[in-house]
Every structure is written in structure tokens, then in C-alpha cells.
Image 1 (cartoon, rainbow over the protein chains, first blue to last red):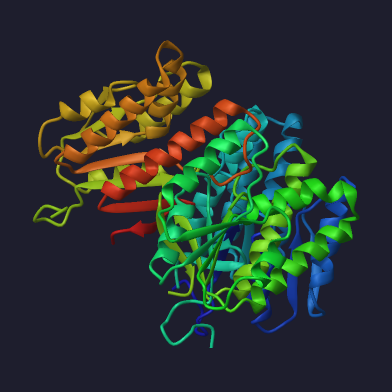
Image 2: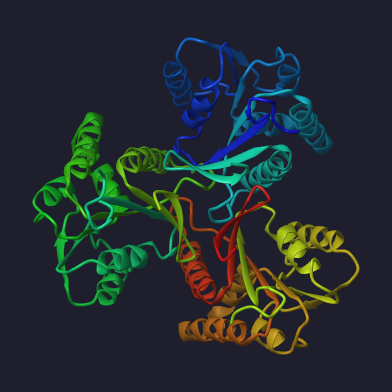
Length: 182
Length: 182
Length: 182
């Protein structure tokens, strides 16, 4: 059974475009559950634009949230969360960006292994777990090979996690369009 | 009550990708209501490609339509429409482009104020009002800072209007996918 | 009546982003029907990246599939298929790319005629016929005029085929979001 007795989905995947309200929607899902809530942040503030976005997300979250940083070892952080505690991962896109940009240090097999480890950590996580990610595959094919690689890896990861998830939602203009579950 | 006695939504937001049939769909919504219909055009014909698109849209519309141009003062034009008259705004994306490109003359607060004025005009408009806009946030992050700014502003505006709307639709291949309402 | 007595749709259009699982979903639709199944491939292997994608798609398909190549004369190949045989076309996006890139040899009217011939072949095909295509219109307007032309032509083709189809699906993270039909 994918859900506990209370009807809370174990694993929810929230996909959406830029500024589609996916983070705010995901936060509301978690805040409907009893605190303390865990916010797992994958962002690395490598420039001012990114720092501003992180500050904006942080300012929106009320008390009741604890934040852990997981720019790379997301699987390890998920495995280390306390059972029963509601967890929000925001977002997979940045985690995958970090992993892909670090790939120069490793083999291509390294990224595959890292992605597989994340999928397995999500599969065994007791939940409630909400994963946020950007849908990036609905535009024109990018000129840039790294961007093409990134959107391919993103799409593959979304498919694998969506297969595991009890609920998959695409946010459009701040509203949830349910793709799987209820 | 968001709708009048006839069941017509006061405010409908029609989002869609390029050539997804959003304008034609929105025109059919308005043409199902008693004329005269008001078409509020935000396009500025700054090149031949744009002139051709405007001519194509205009040719599709039958009699019964009056056109008003509102490349910038969309809030003012909405406030000045006759109560009860069906109004189509096509499209918010071009209005936002015009406002963003004109921003050099003003402060960043100027764009925020202009956007807030538009949201307020939509909130107080008696309807029926149908707003058309492009969903632009589902591709790879653009290289260009202005394009990133544009898609952020677009996404934020869509969220605010979707929260006010009785009905939100995403057109896909000419077909409506209902995101809010019925 | 759009469907035969068995409830199988005559024409299904499967749209989706990059790596959204649209091909695998479409193959499952066909493989639920009695073989032999016909795979109509529109890809031309003009570089290694493309060759790798073609090999990956081919490896996924089990026995029971016959493959025909139709990089350009897709209408002719559809007209020549045996009645009642389940047919998958993967994908329209590549067919349109091939047609658009060849347009230099012809007039713009040539592309319009070729597209009209394809739409007519789909309209008269007895089915079951499943068409796969990329949704490419939900990102920022491309800088490149050819890319803008391509996404306009793609969107127009999708609208025409969706109007003919019994079922239209948008795949998101490997999952079908039904836009038309059941």
C-alpha cells in the first residue's frame, strides 16, 4: 500500500515550468501535515540571481521548517531523515545540474550511478516525501549539447520517479493538474 | 458568486504554447455570447512577421467584433469597456513584452506597478472577460537574462490572474485542457 | 463512427516533450493489439547522437514489429499499409524537420502541399494508427527564424491532426494526460 492509513501519499512528484508555483504548491502539501517539516535544499548560490531566488524561497517559508543543504548527496540526506517526518526536496533540477556540472571529474557511468542511488533512496524512503522539479522538455531542441543532455537526463529521472510516485502533479499558473493519483 | 445567472464565467484565462490554438479557442468562447464583442489587441506591428500574424488573426474574426488597441494601457482600456460586453484580450504576453521593453524609461518598480494595475483592472472588470497568454516556462532556462526575466514575470502574472479566474484552460493542439473550473 | 467494434481508436495522437516517454507509451498502445505491428520510422541518422537514439528505440521494440523508413513520403507509406494492421508513426517532428530542411528545393507552397497530403492520408487511414510527435511550443520564442517557423508548422500540424483524432494524449513524465477521448 502506497499510502499510510491517513491517506497521505508516500511519494509526490510536483513538476512545473518556471514560475509556475510548484514550490509554493509543494510547501502547502507539506504544511498540511504535522510539523516539524524538513526542507532539503539542493541550490548552490553561485551568483546573485541564484542568491536572490534562495532568499525569496526561504522568506516564504514559515516557522516549523528546518532546512538541510543537499547540493550533491541527496540520497544520503534522504536516507538520514527521521521516519514519519514530512520532507520536501526543492528541487531535483538543481541537484541534477550540480551532478552534471561535476561530471567532468568522473565518468558518465558516475552520473548514472548517482541518479540510480537517488531513485533507490526515494523508493525506500518511508514518506511523506514531496519532490519538486522543473519540466524543461517542452520547448525547441536547444542548440547546446549540454542543455540537450540535461533535458534528456531530467526527462529520464522524472519518468523513473513518476513510476514510483503515488501522485504526480503538473503545476500550471499555480494550479495543480493531476497526472497520476487523485 | 463568480458567474452571472447564465453560467458564463466572469474571468477566463486561456494559456497555451505557440500555435496551440489558444486565440481561436478564446474567440469561440466569446462568439458563443451575444455580440457586439470587443477584441483588445496588445500587439505592436514592429516587423513584417508580426504584421502578418496580426493580419491573420484579424482575417479570422467575423463581423460582430470591434477592435481596440492596447499595447500599453491595458488596464485603462479594460476599465473603459461597456458593462456586460464580452471582451477578449489577445494577448498578455505581448502586453508584458511591451511593458518590459519600455522599462528602460522607468524603474523596476514601474513594471511592478503596471502589472499590479492590470491585475486590479481584471479583478474589478464585470466580465465576461477572456484573457489569452502564452505559456513560456516549460523549456530549458534561456541563456539571455532578459528572456529569463520575461518568463519569470509572465509566470508570476499568470499565477495572479489564475487565482482570480473562474476558469483556467491550457490549450494543447487546439484542444482545451481544463486546469480550473469546468 | 470513429472506432471499430472493439473500441480501439482509429487515430491516436501522442504528444509529449523530450524524454517524456511518448514513444514507449505509444508502443504499449500498439502492442496491446494483435501483431504484426508496423513501425514507421521518420528519423534520418545524420549524426552519432541521432544514430544512438534510433538504436535505443529499436532495441526497446520486441519481435512482432516490422520497420519501414519514411523520412519524407510518409503519406505514401501510410496509404500502402495493409488494412487492419496496427501502425505506429514515430515521429511527426522528424518528418516535419526533414520536409522543412528540404524546402530550399521547392516553394513554400511545396511544404503546405506535403503537409496537406499527410493530413489527408491520416484522415483516410483505416487505423489503428498512432502518431507520435514532440510538443515544442511551450518555451521562450526562439531567436532563430527557422526554429520559429518549425514550431509554428508543428503547432499547426498538431491542431489539424488533433481535430481528426479520436484520442489525444500529452505524456508527462511517462504518464498520459488525456486531452481528447478517454
